[in-house]
Image (cartoon, rainbow, N blue to C red; front, side, top):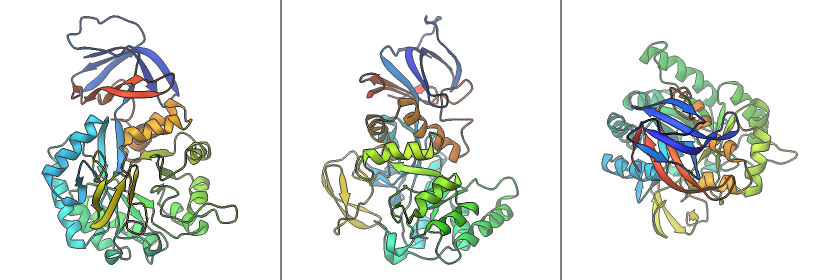
Length: 392
């Protein structure tokens, strides 16, 4: 396959260069900046289009009427199909705070589905180890203190699929749980074979000092920055200031609802282009019309871009990651920088940056061809290539 004459977006080097991408089987074989089809049978004309890596969403709960916590493989297929149509070629679905038995069922079903999916990279465990005062749209009935036995049980049942674990660091035993978990994982899976897990600060009342201590102990990731934590202020910098000072990676929901456009721009200035990860935090109403839905068993009302509980609390987003990427660019973030935040930075957190997340020779051919909507602006998706196959 040849993707010809497109504007290739290089998020790592902040460049946009006109050229061709050569794909052989499921890999990017070569990239050059000359013209000609070189006898390829399958040629995609990318004139007046941007060529960007497939997007990676490391935090979403559902879409098209389905919730990941339904623990249903048929639902997973529908969600994956929607994500692919919208340029999200790799997904890390998130759980919510539920009964332990339900989490076990979800992990079992996820392990089975992972064996038949090229898009499904693993799980983001969001709950039940969260602070009650910042639970957001999580079910308070099932919140509990960090439990290494439960964590390792879920990891075993999921066949090692849990890749991100969100936790409030101020809870009793939270920081100690990190080291205990890693030790237990080495025992269970064998040293060097244990699943790569990133502990993340989220749904927390932690102050600056508590957050700094947690980051130093291994919680180098922040779940949906600004949301589900104390506000960043000049006398109380809280988790946001700690993350900035200590080099943590931060998730950002750039749906135009959770975070103001000015704050989107400010976040990239504060954290730099290599530490911001765009996520959707989308729930089941994404891709659907307004109406009544649910998240983690809680009733949710959807009107326009807003999904809220009865008390007005935001209950995830109704915006997919591609739309979040477009909004980020429209807010004033440079296209290569925004693309990196939706691709390469997420791959780094998953330690898959040598496989996916950028258009480079030898990497997996997950690529989008997107119409230009003006200089540096994204329009509609024209083609989606997954593992070297044009799927849309």
